[in-house]
Length: 201
View (cartoon, one colour):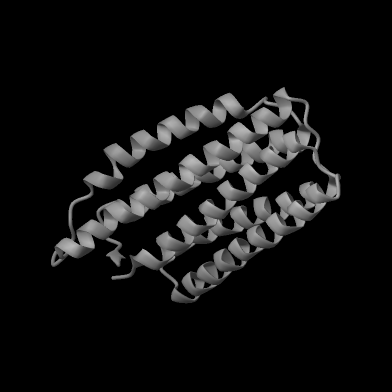
């Protein structure tokens, strides 16, 4: 478990999470409007986020008494943040593929993705608040929330397969939708991992 400190590490982590949340909003906006208007901006935010990780977060000095294990935990949290970023990029790419290939999703698929988009908004917001306020009840709620969202991804995947078997979905739309489900699952998995690894002074 990595401890937060007063040297700016928690603030830098909060900044990274804010950028990830902005990426999500840009992706969601283009997804619902079936366009690729914000995707280039999402890519730029993603690039800037990597620089923040390298220049700020990983250079935060160790707090007094911090063990080697705790220091390693800081890097593990940043690795989770990086995987969240990469999976948001996968969702962005799937959105772009959907637009470029003129693929339309069924109402069921859109409703299911809305659950995941809203769930990701809540998860990122709660993770940022937990880092800044270190409320253990918020941590427990976040872990439970991400666990539920991961279960939703599994349920939605089964429902999607049933729709495909019934001929409701085309192979093209099925591939794009499943890629988005897989990426959202990994987003929630790594947000949950961050919450578990982050600790309080």
